[in-house]
Image (cartoon, rainbow, N blue to C red; front, side, top):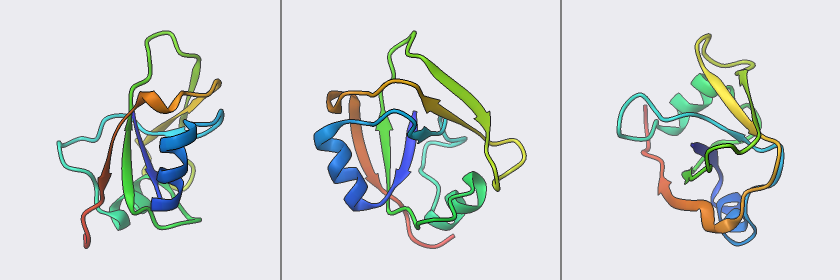
Length: 100
């Protein structure tokens, strides 16, 4: 699953892992990450401008909730974890492309 974050959040999560309640989104439609503005519009990210996209490995059977995205695209969903993920489950961090 993917998570849009600032560089500072990504650095903290790379060391400490992902806390309970953090929001992740499913695989993107294409192979390339969405630009920051497109991610804001699609996933309703009003509080910050994402700079990176984290790719997390979520083991099968991990308790999670799938919900519609508030303030985002009508067909977009997000996954909220109900238990923390260790930092070793972070597969990679990609810088988001600039522009639209």
